[in-house]
Length: 322
Picture 1: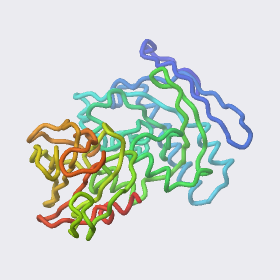
Picture 2 (picture 1 turned 45 degrees about the vertical axis):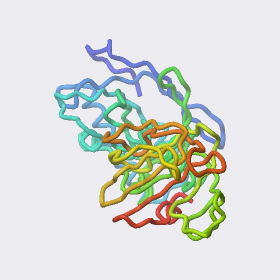
Picture 3 (picture 1 turned 180 degrees about the horizontal axis):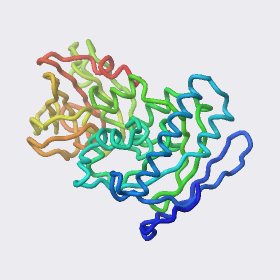
């Protein structure tokens, strides 16, 4: 795409985009993309962006219907353009869905390109990258739970590899033109379900009847134990409000979070509590550190999920991610 000729040249964001075809290793270079200042017809760059979006949307739709080969998908990736826009109050852009609607681009394309793990992350994300074509952008190095889930569900050979520079860093993505969130990914992104409270762990004790390792008595274990190194970050398994924090002889230092639909989650044996009482948290918010306080034989997280006061097997509730 050539340079734009416009009075707002000072707002040019000089980026280098390199699209790489895995089969040949050939580089297709695209450079110099304009910044969108306002999402209205008075903004020349936004008008250009909308024309590209409409053109690319039609191409992607036709390619999907025709079940085209990789060469056609590479051509779509070659013509992909990335713009940048900082949400403005005057544009009435308060969330991801309103931005996607205004730009006529499915929100999964914007969310995955900007690596948003959930809708609430949009509020503090700053400038947003806007692709000119619908699709999914899966980073080479996954970090969030959503990205790890997507990576596990999608074949490694799927998509076109691209590299571009952002915030002084090089990032590699697999761009899958026309792809959308799967039902599982959509549920996960919208925070309608639970996620594991640790990024790395080993299940050391399951839910149900077991011999208590401390007392030696047969008891119902109402959660699961996730072994992890001392001090490992513990995250909220779902958005909610911190309803209780404290320390007792059984759970040691613990945090309890109240969620919608009468769900509650408990995080026990913590070495440190990072949550504040009666504060709202999002899924993935840091709430504590793995420890061995209370009735414990070593560093691990005791994790419980209850609905209407009844303990549920977390491994079943979190079955999507096993």
